Image 1 (cartoon, rainbow, N blue to C red):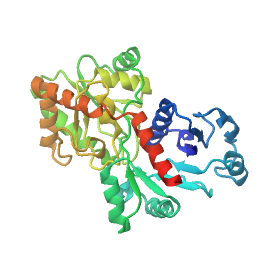
Image 2: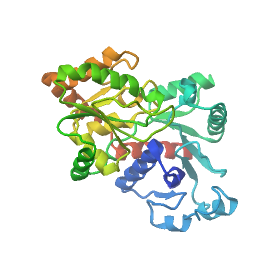
Image 3: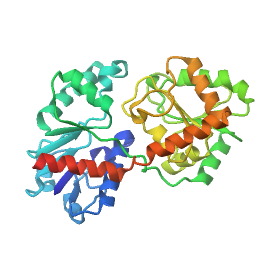
Image 4: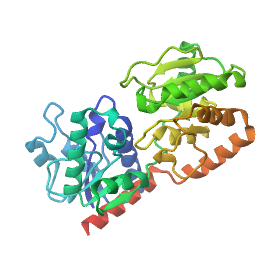
Amino acid sequence: MHISIVTEQLRKRIPGGIGTYCRGLLKGLKELENDDEIYQLNGLTFVGEKATSLAWDFKLPLYKESLVKQGISSKQKLVHSTSFEIPPIKRVMTTMVHDVLWKSYPQAYTKRGIEWHDKALEKALKKSSALIVPSQRTKNDILNLVGSEVNIDVIAEGSDHVSTPDLAGAKKLLKEFGVQGDFLLTVSTIEPRKNLDRVVEAFMNVRKSLGHKFVLVVAGSHGWGGAMKDVPGVVLVGAPSLKVLSGLYSMASCLVYAPIAEGYGLPPIEAMMFSTPVVTSDIPSVEGIGDKVDPYDVDSISKGIYDCVADDVYRSRQIEINNEFIRDLTWKNAAKKHTDVWKHCLN
């Protein structure tokens, strides 16, 4: 097969979860070591020796006609869009739809943003031979929206994209912010749907029971909705590098991640890669495993934190369950399932 993958997200200043999907998918395709020729449509990195001929001039507008002609050869029969950035190219098309949060949590979007996403989904449905989604929940959400059966394949994302931990860098970062000893970690953009106010309140409620020796480290950039309040025992360290973040995952006593709404939710499965137990609400990335907390109930989150930190038997059992869960969550497996979908569409 000759497949072109739109990885325009990697050109953005903060690639985010879609950028992680792009890098992970390319990683998995490379690990498959088959005869497929895989190209990127942005010229940053590639799988396939001929991808250099497809490099785009970053100074020119995205999808300019001359670039489309340069970047797509006649032998490339299928284009996979990794987001709603769908190029105007007449090829067999598949599209990754990560979530429909603009419908389930519209308060996080402007009116214009909601209208754009509505049109983007309509376009994806019209142009794509198949949609790929990361969870059964997202598939159900789309079917509920469109009211009819469409070709949707569920492919869970991998968790083995995490970087090698920079423990020295993580320790240096913690020292800079005065963090000594044990800590809990939350990894999140600071915005209302991430539910950080309740997470902080739950942590403060249980901190005394834990002997005041723990602090809560919040790793992430500011999004929207106002800054977090200064709370003793809660430390904001900003958005660290991926290697330093891996170091924080590996050093944390547990990850606390309880958003109100989430498209997929990578932090819990990333933490699991380091055998770090997680306290999480019911989000798509961890469907079907472990105990979940109620993101609207501070007491529920507090209990989850206490059990995960203070109950050694519970903690060990959770780590065992999580390790089993992520065993098959590899990007190689995800890439193989993508290629199966592509072959089916081409045939």
